[in-house]
Length: 131
Image (cartoon, rainbow, N blue to C red):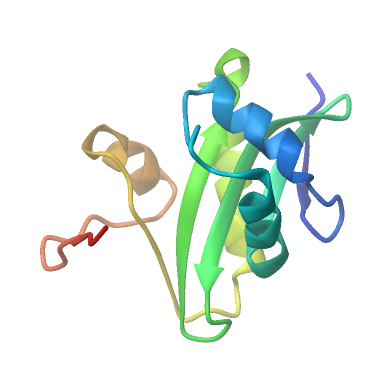
């Protein structure tokens, strides 16, 4: 299977295409296309493409120097658990190589996956949300 991992600069992602991927995995039904379009213009992101179809995506929120936060690592249901997520995260980390600290938030059961990708669980930090 030939999958290409490309940065947003190499192959821009359209908001409606990303919305289809989110919908495939049951994410972010409340997000609006214009808001996703604005997000894509402001953040570092990568996509996984198979025969011109977006099958994976990840983005990072950053001020551009000191910190970056990886968000929305998402793989189409038909292509999960075959290594595409690892390739996307690796490419995103490469795109962020000039950043001092790269963090991510994940569900508890995904900690071993991200540890295999050189992220370390920290008991000294707590995620707090305000909505």
